[in-house]
Length: 568
Image (cartoon, rainbow, N blue to C red; front, side, top):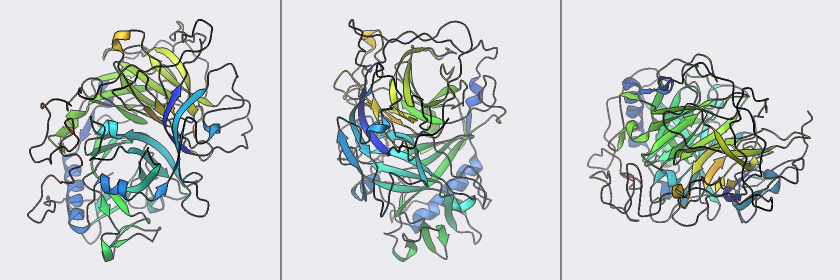
């Protein structure tokens, strides 16, 4: 087909309300599956040697460079997005002229457009960086605040270059203020020991061998407490720590923030491709089972295409597979099992406690609340004579033993939607979602309100499910094989118009599920953590600016460093 010539701008929408789709025709479920889903395909492991190697290099970097906290990043925001309430910053991002006028539209509550500066730093139209994953302070903290004043949204971007190695600038992380639209980029980096035996760092790539690899896709992220979990498609999770963010400008002569061609340590000076702040990887959780085949029930070693957090019970991190024209899988892990107190574990395995088969193809993001899954489906770049708007699917409730998720409702979403993140609230009966477009033609983040469950007793008040979208992959829209229908029609009003979609209620402030409880002293708070200035419910050590093990001068004590080649 011929591609459209029209251009869509990139926006980050913070709150959008979507109408529930009108009644849809029943579709067929995937063909019968012979293989039984195996949780072992999603088992993860941290390697003790790799853990010690990364930790040792980070400890040395802590002694070389000044650390700053998230609040400092937010205060130092140097780029300005455009915030718009009641509509999308770019209407083309949530509408398509080829769409049937009888279909419901995406109703935007709030949107943020990335900085549009043709003469300078143009995030709206750049073809070097592409936004992907999204997470929010609602994932990080039960009380949804970081410090006294900040409620950031975080988004990852991956860099595109023609060659491999350091020309691939890896991944940057945007810290966005959804109220003002101001934001700042931080470069994610992989620490290693250089030839002279000093700690350095390089770009985050899918292969960390010197001169090899392309920028990590970073298709999903979860911010939980001090840790940022970044999906590594073919391996598992890369983990970063908010207590280790280096300010190269404050480093004085030891830092350079003007040279955009260098990264890491060069002749005693630290570079970050021109970015002021860099954030090193602290550990990795890698799949145990070697990958063999993809996008089948029996495929060994799952893919990690997207990620999110479920706070509706015991807190779980979620990840799933994007399969072009195929039905991938999603899995869940208790997030507390990744840590030992306030630190990441240094050895052992992390076991998934649920794996499901997805009911739709080309799923770009998945999150869960009260046993229902919310799935974003993208149809790629704009094409003529095609309805390119995405969909947000809501499933029937599922138990950990459920193999096949079943679609219960479908509603429209922005063009190019991707990763999902749920933001609960204690007020209102609807919840919204945000989506961000990846490519310059659909770089948009919008919000939508998933449909309500049929059981009113399951409803809780809610707020944004935030979707980060791309638009670079086009769903094949294959004919669905199989026999019984697996999607029930969406409900409309008695006059035939679509109902406003509502999200099940989420946890009220003052209550909390999982490891950290608000309104209760039963919190896993580290004895050395600073007092919580916003009230109870904070993850141990978050926003204190304190590092776990410091010497008398306040520097992190160094751990023994292994002198070995930098692992992937």
